[in-house]
Amino acid sequence: MSSRLWTDNFHDFLVDRDQERCIQCLVCVRQCPYEANIYREAADVVDSVHKNCTGCHRCEALCPTRCITIRLNPSELRPHATWTSRNVKNVYKQARTGGVLLTATGCELDYPTYFDNILIDACQVTNPSIDPLREPMELRTYIGRKPERLEMETGEDGRVRLKTEIAPQLTCEVPILFSAMSYGAVNLNFCEALAISATGTGTYWNTGEGGLHKKLYPYGARTVVQCASGRFGVSKTYLETSAAIEIKVGQGAKPGIGGHLPGEKVNRDISETRMIPIGSDAISPAPHHDIYSIEDLRQLIFALKEATDYEKPVFVKIAAVHNSAAIASGIARAGADAIVIDGFRGGTGAAPTMIRDNVGIPLELAIASVDDLLRSQGIRNEISLIAGGGIRNSADVVKIIALGADAAYIGTAAKVAVGCTVCQRCYTGKCPWGITTNDPTLSKRLNVEIAAEQLTNLIDGWAHEIKEMMGLMGINAIESLRGNRERLRGVGLTDRELNILGLKHAGE
Image 1 (tube, rainbow, N blue to C red):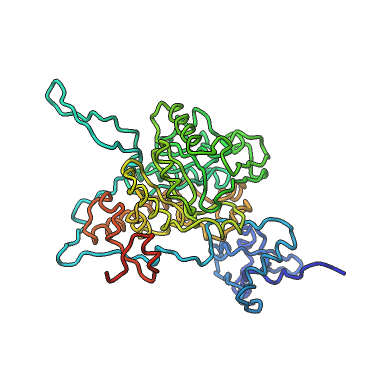
Image 2: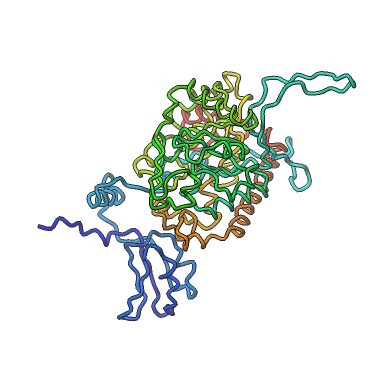
């Protein structure tokens, strides 16, 4: 008896094609790397293979006659509160393959998004707002360790000078940085576009654990390089070229596990940059094998500082988990210059679906609890706090800073800015938009100059909106917004949630 599962027709999308408008130009056939559009020569017709469609909308966007519409498949399995279509289809996939379910981008399940339950206060009458078009508004943010106190001295010439030595700082003209996306997971064109945009907007981009391609060395002054558990691409030159170093302990999309770049994506360029053999899998271990305590972490932090003559800030990145606050306190005391908290909606090029959707905690709760604990211990002012994982717009940036962060990392938003439609197939290496692929033909679809311009437009647009929101709150400097939860109110949240977030309910 055959054991085949007849599930090919239970696909997620339909590729609707108006054959009367189709001119058989074959653009859709050439544009789809998943072969959802094919030309049947015998019948002289362009046809759709619905089961192959990933919902990327590339063919729909480029069809010159607009004869294609991608839509969700209206056919559904029998409704069941426990056995939803998603759960049933996942079982089908694993029954066929026997493998781990893979996905990309952040958690897609309907957990509460606290950003959407937080409202921003506005000035009225007695506390006038500020017009950002007429008044100076300060978004500049310094990332790095701050001294507990400042000491001054008077020189022989009678001038007062700062005696305290200030640790190295990153100067961000906007409180937004591009988060870690490694070369290999994304291609060199996208890395270069991020570097160009970061340089132009006065912010920073992050190499992820993929190393720094030599072509991007000129952008080193605006580059945060990552030292992850695999140590891919880490060398003295790599560290010295950077503006800052980030030790990645955890990632919001897959807390507690490492990374895996399939060998078929490791071409000559990636091989040289990561310093691994061509075609070999790049597997980063779940833990750093030299870090099992805060003391071990301190050794690595100071080893990296020593290697760079104490000229580079060292960040430590962890995933948002239940005890993030206590861990962050240890990181601060271990000598890090900044802590990065990555929420469970953080993006990824590839992650096991069950881990992405079931591990970690929301960024908003993590940042509020970390900020609270560091304040209660009197060390919050000594270290910077960067929040990433699920930042979707400028209002999210304002809210996360008011909850306690110094700045925000954005990743998925940056990909969307250059055309990503969040189809969640980054791990296949066939990105139709030329972002998360190293296929030479597909990579050419991402023009570096145009992508850099779009990224710059995104940062500029968000910066304008942040100034507007600061102005309506009567705030003219981002410093005054940091941890200022009095300007936020919660709606539809429980007392427990409000207590963790440190917010009053709307109306109070």
